[in-house]
Image (tube, rainbow, N blue to C red; front, side):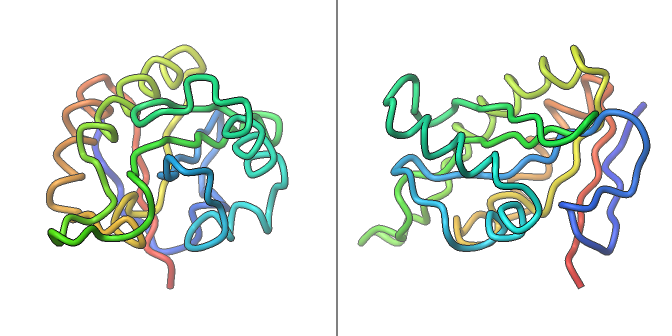
Length: 157
């Protein structure tokens, strides 16, 4: 049985061999400019470019959708729309949408299996999106780990 491996380091610099997908949460309003996306853009320009084009096109740019962007041989970045807008609303509900994250991960798991790829990530949804890891971790276990996908979670030092 696969499991979640916790590592110290940078998720944009995966410590692994073979095919890898680096995943992260995006918002549904086309905003790219704070948080983990800055580390992605510093390393590769294509994920931001593709995300912005996807937003402009309006085609299936919805919560629960994903976009796979190949950035190097054997490395993809997966833009996952799991965040509603960017601000905690007046009822105190943070931007993260757990059901959208779940839909994204279901689509991602098919891609990972097709590519025979491991999944690398920061603690998705727990920064600017305001999510709680104790809610997200079981979703990752239910969808990725049970589908026999190796998962690496990076805590940046």
